[in-house]
Length: 140
Image (cartoon, rainbow, N blue to C red):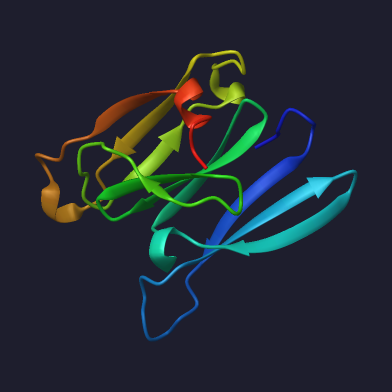
């Protein structure tokens, strides 16, 4: 993701614990003026399946799914808040981005929550959620 100031943000995960195939470690890399910095980050309660970064009002927000729950936090040092959204087993999350047709001036953050649990098929439920970007400013 490229932020308003031209910095490139990358989030990736590793699954390197042979004792727990589901344990993830997340990293947030920032590339600015050719210099890369890398920081370890975590999901809620050191848990998490997928993480996405979004920008609103000049702030970076971390959106993280943990099996059937969705969390968000403001900045690297923020506190995760569980969002009141429907449970989706094995949730994969996708967010709107400027390269995909949404503008920085849009009023909403659009999130697609897709079921990733094979046991839920063929009747899996998927959801589209909209969050007012102005509500994100209230996070600590």
